[in-house]
Image 1: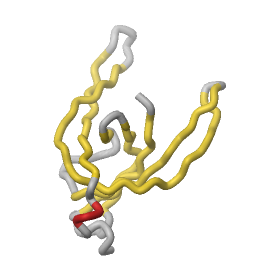
Image 2 (image 1 turned 135 degrees about the horizontal axis):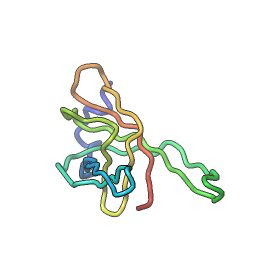
Image 3 (image 1 turned 90 degrees about the vertical axis):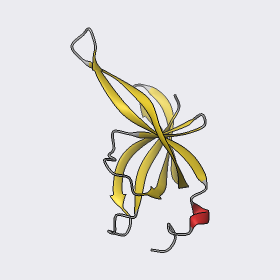
Length: 110
């Protein structure tokens, strides 16, 4: 697959935010995110949908985000591009060569 290798396609500067879980007073877990490394990626919109969640209407936008492979990366992380936040739903190795990864993400409103 030559598309991800074209350096000009990796034109969005994203920040990787890693999840930090801490116990709360009710026996549950409170999740916060800490900013980490910045990197270049391509963002391709896939789908926009309207749905009802918890008796209210929501809009969801999904994207494919392609970036150079990172060690110890999983779906607990999220990406930030300015005010835009992308929750990682799934991650795959694009070519099976551990050079590029593709993440299926949902854009969320913070």
